[in-house]
Length: 283
Ligand SMILES: Nc1ncnc2c1ncn2[C@@H]1O[C@H](COP(=O)(O)OP(=O)(O)OP(=O)(O)O)[C@@H](O)[C@H]1O
Ligand SMILES: [Mg+2]
Image 1: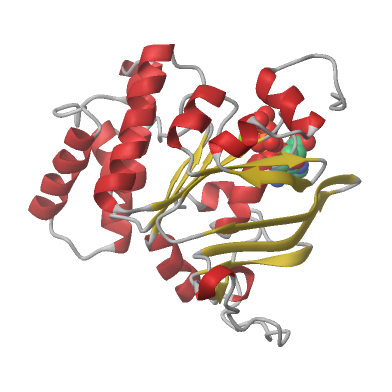
Image 2 (image 1 turned 180 degrees about the horizontal axis):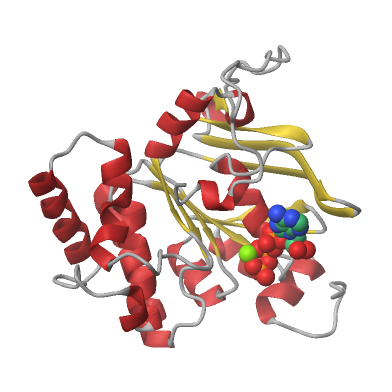
């Protein structure tokens, strides 16, 4: 079982590619650059619960996209479709010109090697040392030898300010250290795309800002494309090139931090200011 399989709803368990529906050719948009990640008309229900009801989102290469929205609106569900852990009921997700749900297992594996994900919960395997957690994907997806893996583990742990914790167990780390170890694990393979699910939740404001700085740093130095889910508006404004708000299963609005702050949309205003009164109703 892999880190990803443990969250797997539908494995790409048949090796036959699905037949394309004819509409899957990459199309040039905005000035001719195809977005690296494109979510189109995504619908997803669990039983009677309609979570996504036609969500659309495009993320350009090198962009830092932040997704905000209330608890339970489907933010984690949305990004799990990007990495192929969930399969759309309708609509599609295209990454680098490939429709994720149509990939054969080997191609999905290749796509995932180019993506890192920081999961919202249980970022680490408790039964493995931190070093083994970070090494996991390297052992699974590369032919690196033990010495090379050890070097890479040290390198990514150093990047997140956790040099030398290889032998510790996750239970021995503080919450902030766990998040950083999770980041190191997400970055181990040098991904082109990183998905962060609530990277700062549960951290004190200073630690949260350190995580923001790390995310910005990866972005600037490693030129990754990222999608970050957060409720933390300070973080959203700091790390987002653009912010998209998910509401009632669709993207309600997308814009730069400034555009979002100045939005006249009452749904956006209520959310970003955390007001109890307004159009957003909580279930
Ligand atoms: N695998 C699943 N099976 C059944 N229901 C699910 C599954 N995954 C998510 N859901 C439901 O879908 C809804 C959206 O869940 P999701 O985890 O995406 O919310 P979220 O926006 O990330 O919320 P939060 O901010 O609390 O993390 C929830 O009602 C959740 O219970
Ligand atoms: Mg979530």
